View 1 (cartoon, rainbow, N blue to C red):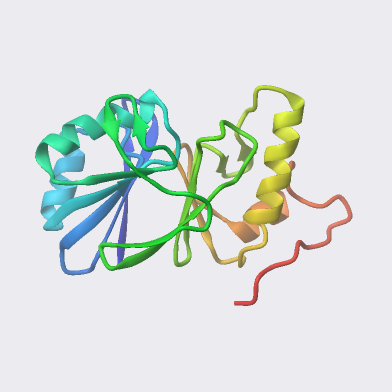
View 2: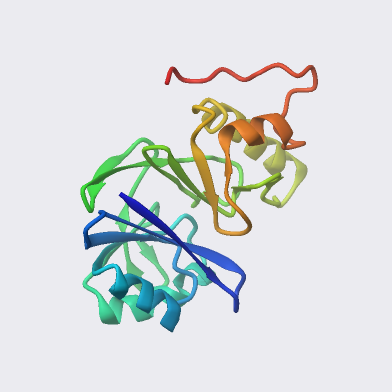
Length: 198
């Protein structure tokens, strides 16, 4: 498996390309902008985009989707059956599907908009704008913020330290790093959260 990060300088957002080592069917995660650099990356690796995962159902996530759907015969995946004028395969918490030969698990990390999903592929966790390096997404009110932080602690910090967190904005990080340094997620007494066995 190969992972590529495409950073769009026009919208300051990451798009992730995941596919096999030798080309073929591939997955895009949160294609906020389709530009010539992303097209060259896809074509240079001899990929065909068959699946597009959307972590959040908003207009920003669809900028690149409409163009991609004109070029590739791809399916959209989100936790809604439709986003604006685009039909999606609806995923729910705990759903596991196989895309491009990879197992993708959908995770609901509640507390933000109710239509956000996080996707896990092995040791890769695509978090959209819910969680990034040293930060947690803004929320509409303190209650929603508390719910989001609690859900991240319960669902994300229970994963192995080595799991890479790949956000829509900012640099990548890991579960272990966020557990240790994220001011909203680290324990005041310096204890560790329960982790799943490796």
